Image (tube, rainbow, N blue to C red):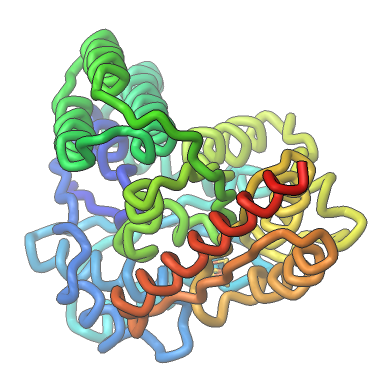
Amino acid sequence: MKITFPHLGYCSIPLRSLFADLGHEVIVPPPITRKTISLGTRYGPEFACYPLKLGLGNFIEALELGADTLVMGGGIGPCRFGYYAQVQRDILLSLGYEFKMLVVEPPLGHAGEFLAVLREVLEEKSWFDLARAAQLAVVKLGACDDIQRASLKLRPLVQDKLAFSRLYQQTLMEIDEAGKVRDVRLAKNTALTAMEAIPRLNYKPPKVALVGEVYLIAEPAANLRIEERLGNMGVEVCRHVWISQWLRVNIFLDFLRLHRQEKAEKLAQPYLQCFVGGHGQHSVGETRKAIQEGIDGVIHVYPFTCTPEIVARGIMQKLAAQEGMPLACFSMDEHSGEAGFQTRLEAFVDILGTRSKEMNSYS
Ligand code: SF4
């Protein structure tokens, strides 16, 4: 098979490793650019969620490079994610592409379909081969998350932001190329030591909780590199969604039926009792958590027309107003422009600075 998948931040690193170790040719779509966005928006429905359009653009670019098998996540609602794969498949077929689409359904309640996709990907390989390939992929994903976590903490403090960015990119490349678990760990540990060694400013950065829809949080091309921008402005970002943690809960624990209510879901309960799709409940819960933990501000990012996050936004605005918590909401799509975005972020960071000065003068 010539396998491809849509981008989701650095997830192409573990996915490439997984499918290549199972003996497939992997065609990673080119990085998301204006061309990807215009392909997705030209052929995707106007009011479809932004991630659907970007994924469609990724698929078109990968099919043009020779991919013949598309791997896509499935879902069961209540929001639109469950329809993504079907809509994308119909659009691509209508454009004349020939391919097979493998939809990975959530294992809880769909164990048979989940296992059927795994069997198809395995072809001649054994379950043991899958376990070995999955182990390396999971270690790579965890290493990427660790590097990103360190980057969120250290970027606001380091003096040479350019050198820091180069080190970050170089480390991701090394993790991508590593063929063994120990090589991944070596690349990660060397990078963490090098990051710690970069000279720092003597400064206590304000902290911002970044909450919202998972794709918008994890894909820098969709969120206009919000984490990097905030880090360069001297702000520490506390992110609530990590893909390795999301996989652990939604794939492994779901599959073993061990999934328990998460802390953010519990915190959201007094305001939002039911699952509204996506990360709507988490966004509310994480806002409460940020208030309880004394975080300086909350930034909410979500795709334009994303129903779960629109539900969450109303509650978050009320909570933030009650508690005096600065909150900025960014609804993003193909029309989001960098200049306006940067200006709004800078204004928000100014508010954080003014607020912390006021708080210090009262204490
Ligand atoms: S969470 Fe929002 S953006 Fe994602 S599929 Fe659901 S409605 Fe669309």
